[in-house]
Length: 79
Image (tube, rainbow, N blue to C red; front, side, top):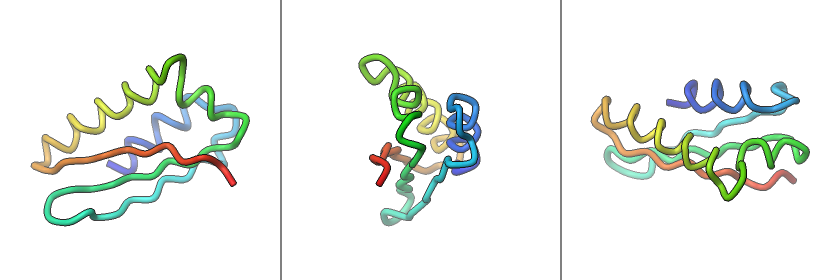
């Protein structure tokens, strides 16, 4: 699942070397992923009204469901 999010994000951004995905277990069959990108690329990853980020979340949930898991994606502000 981490690889899927990395692939999607790197395909969208201008600085793919700054894409970082952190995967954590949230207990049981739940997985939490954090996506960090360059400050300049935040708009590309979030999209207009959050449509791109929501589409990535949907794809992630489908991939997780195939594995019998639940997944959540958070796009984190760059530091």
